Each structure stands twice: as C-alpha cells, then as structure tokens.
Length: 281
Image 1 (cartoon, rainbow, N blue to C red):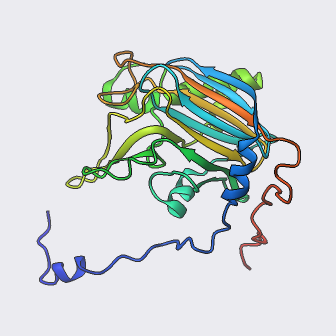
Image 2 (image 1 turned 180 degrees about the vertical axis):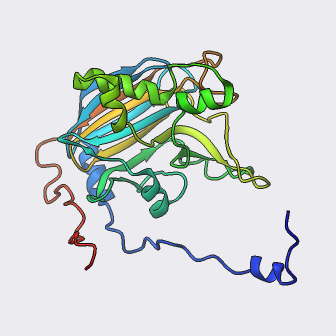
C-alpha cells in the first residue's frame, strides 16, 4: 500500500454529493394504483420450480406479485418489453436513481435509448427490513446474477442451474430459439428477496440469509407490456452458497392481477425517453 499523504484525512472528510438527485423524477400515482389493485382479479399464475426459471407475461396496467410459497427462497428477475426484447431492465441506472436496493414506490427502469419505467413496486412485505447493522438490505440491484462462467472461474466446476443458465433456458424455450441465440438477451437482475450489501472493510459484495418467509411477497404495477423471466436461485435463501445443489431450495409463485375496467382512468403507459438522440455534432 502506498503511503498516505499528509492531507489524507482532509481528502477523506470531503462530504459526498448525490450523483442523481431524484426529486424531479416522474412520480408514480400510488393512490391510483392502490385503488386499481383493490378491485383487481387474478388472471394468471406461474409456478417457478426450485433451481429453474419460467417466463410470464403482464400487460400494461396489470399487477404481478412474486410470492414465497414453501420456504425461504430468493429469485432473479429479468424484465423485457413484451414487443421488443431489446428494451430490458437496466439495473445499473435503477440503482443510480433509487439506491442499491428497491422497495415500495421505486421503479425498474429500462435500457437506453428508452429509459422509462417498466414496473413500479407497489407492495413489499419485507419493507420493514431497512438496512441492517452489516449494511445489508433486501431486493438488490448490485449483484448481477449467479452464472456458470464465474462459477467455473472460481471453482473449476461445470454447473448448469445458475440463474443465468436458468433464465437462458426459459427464454430460449419461450422464444423457440437456441440457447446461444437467447443468452445475449439475459441481463442483470433485480435480486428479489435477496439480502446483500458490501463489507465495510474490503468492499466485497456479500449475501446473508434472506428474511423472506412463506407468504411474503413483492408486487409490481406493469407500466408497459412486459415479458418477465424469473429464476428460483440455486442458493435457496443465500445463507451459505449458491451455484450448487447443496442449498435447500423452494419454488416461487408469480401471480398476475387485472384491474376492473375503468379503474385506471387517466393513466397511460410512459413514453420512451425524450432525448432527441443526436449525441451532438
């Protein structure tokens, strides 16, 4: 380590500045959403088996819920625009706009050049968790997804039920294409129910046992027509390890709810970002 300069403490003491003050973000109408949800009826459900992924669709103006049904389990969520899969969840920008972990009232934003809300979190039964003494919190947008490439790099093993592989298989099956064709569309995730943070001493990404229990859920309002892809992570509750068959794993349930006709009067899907796209001279 290099020797600290004489003014090291002064440099460290400089106060931080929030990169993206979010007070001017378009705000979701949570009162309207709550009223629409109150009269909504369940129209579909998809059970995601342990160590597998499943695709589901949600129309703009519908709600979808991800629920723990048998035991503590985390899930890796991809979202695409149903009619243009190149528009997909942008975890890095969602993190920059809202923070390292998402909860009620915050949004999943889409990739460039669209950069618009894809889904708004309307309910979160783990919202009470906050940030714990280790710096951990729930529903992160800092981890990318467990994948077979990193697993091979670190362990030398070949494991095919990492979330990346699960999402790839599910998307390929849904699209009727090869896994090689589907894989580039798999992207960084919202780690649903996962409890994570960064260590204070080394700055390393950590996971710990999720506080999720059967009956807990996170619910979203679909701002645009969505193709969802959810993997029930091979890490189970991520209390010890992932990318293996050692952890106890459980399914996750996705439920879709449609509001009554007229319940969203005055609401419309957000348009793509208004930037003119010339990128200067």
